[in-house]
Length: 273
Image 1: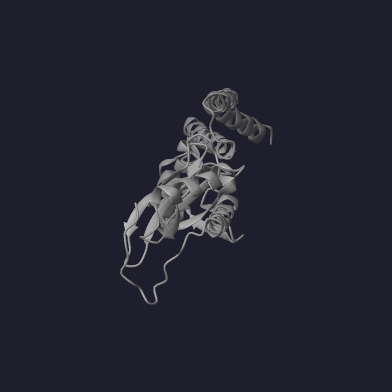
Image 2: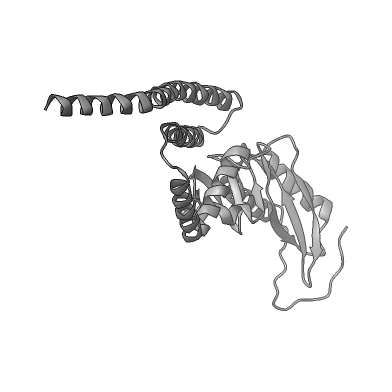
């Protein structure tokens, strides 16, 4: 019996002698690695804040950095201990490939979301036009962008679709030029009508004084002249200015006895100045 105990003790001693150095080394690498990863994540956070990265993107990127570095650390520690990591890497690669194929569309939207959050072609609160859809950006998510239309409808647009199309940001410059249209008869004086419209636009509190509003002839129709009315306003006032401008112009035309040609019974007439 004492001989068995001695034999077991010697075997245990040999195991400790064999595995203790790499085990201690692995523990040291693990502790030092975790400390380094913590410092790297802190440095990455400060760098993102200094670079004005989107607050919505920072937590996600930091977690990706943290998880990625810790995975590499675990593989390194396993290799030091003597665990074969090649098979784990192969399984992980195969699983990643299969998941990537299954989520190809979602990953495309995810990548597009990251691009949007980094380069910021628009931000929350901006008025944008995307894929013929117009509205105000309510939220930028990793996979989708939420846009609220003037009719209070919420559009959920995949970020991949946004990246693949032209995005018109109406808030980027701080103000927008509105594109309104009114008609006048050929016999009426254009300078007179132009001044009437400009007077009404200048009297509107939500129309900007600079740049100055513009009025010009767009085209000649069969029975009337189409005028382009171009006031400048803040994006949030778009519909208020649009409705008020049309209302004021109609009332001004009525006061100044500006006629409107109808499509029925078009007659030949003189062309005004």
